[in-house]
Image (cartoon, rainbow, N blue to C red; front, side):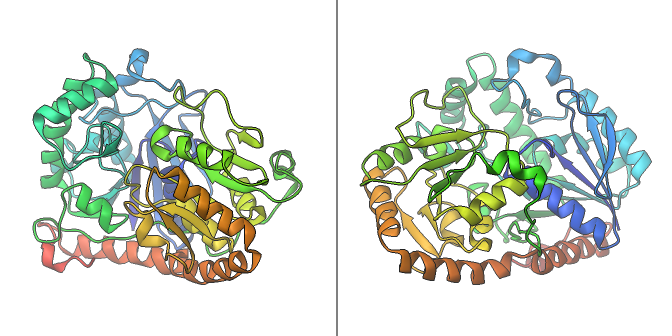
Length: 418
């Protein structure tokens, strides 16, 4: 098959979705498919390059010319409506790559919506966030999980988040083009049941199949290229957090819980720093930025356990299965897709989101009980086998084949597996 991935970001930019798209593209290419990626061009990255057998096209958007739209200097986002320059660039890429399948992963894929009627490529859309139902993509309202979208509520919420000039246009365009997306997409692929529910997608009214993220079959081994990162890890025991250092990721309750622990080992935070990242950290907490995924995987293997204390309904959490594959238990919040992965008391521990006391108690429990850590780690490693590439990637291939076999009409909802 000829497959074009369309994703807002792609490595070397780092994040769960970026790693997932890279892994899927590389795995599909290795299995004999012709795979290309269209993504935003940032910094001094080249407009085109061949990486691991995947043709990577980096495109400019009209929105990127308005620097005031973005809070993070290195991570502009595509707007929730087709961007003129991006759509024109995608048209050229489609003409060159001639994809049978266009696989979208975020709002940038909406730039393909005007092009779909002009060709025969089928459109599948992975749902990694709440891009259909929420203008912020997080499904959070006033620092708590949102009960669902509503015009007045969303306008007020987005205005508070983006500003009074940006918020309303983003909300209105997302409402409008989410409706177009629902009509144009041949198959939705949410990463969890929670993601489908939060986006208002159900098998009764939309073609969908839940397919989770995955980890490669073979662990990426250590190499001298990683030494400069791994030497920054504590020499002894430590706990690990991987992800954006943002409030909705549970950074505040995590730091509060850490301060209450009895003689704890260091806590290593690996991820992107944002304006909201706390300036002052407790003694023993260290931040490491801009680590490649291979270094992160090795950090999981060296850590006592991994922490995912999100207070938002995390759609999935690639970091969880990465830690489990490394044989490490995970302490996570009982919310969103996290609770679909962690088997409480078996592969890790679940606590209520935002409850620093409960989080601290779970951390202290694993710190004090090496036997429990070891048993949970073994269980986690076994459970991670169901999230390996050899199991998950064929599910994407079957989904593509099903979409192509229905050429001329969308898959009936009842025909899609969940």
